[in-house]
Amino acid sequence: MTVAVHEGLVEHAAIDKAFHALLAAVEGSGDVAATFQAVVDLVRHHLGSEELDIASFADVDAEEAKGLLLEHEGIRQTLDALAAQLEAGHLPPKAVHDLKLRFAIHEAREETGLYRWASAR
Ligand SMILES: [Fe+2]
Ligand SMILES: [Fe+2]
Image (cartoon, rainbow, N blue to C red; front, side, top):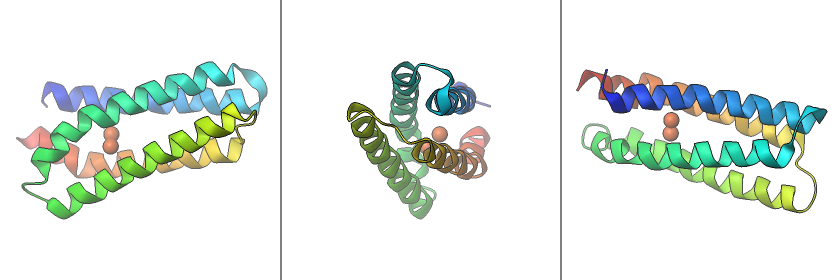
């Protein structure tokens, strides 16, 4: 396993944990603004660094690479939409739950595709 693959998997686990903390916060037991910012920072950093590997992965599976990049774009747009909701005063738990689930599905897709390819390099 390369350092990049290891780091990516560690980041997936950290992001899962951050989403869990955010969900607990919006459901009433924590600092929503701080936990949301933690999710945003981790996810944005993660997507950006992963896209360097996705650019190489496109040489072997252009369709899958394109699909991952589209999901990244959707995740970024959703983070912006949630930021606007938070700014307006209410971050709905369902919206957080939906993104948490969507991110978990994205991670699973990567771990059986992009990451499997990257660790075999
Ligand atoms: Fe990703
Ligand atoms: Fe990822």
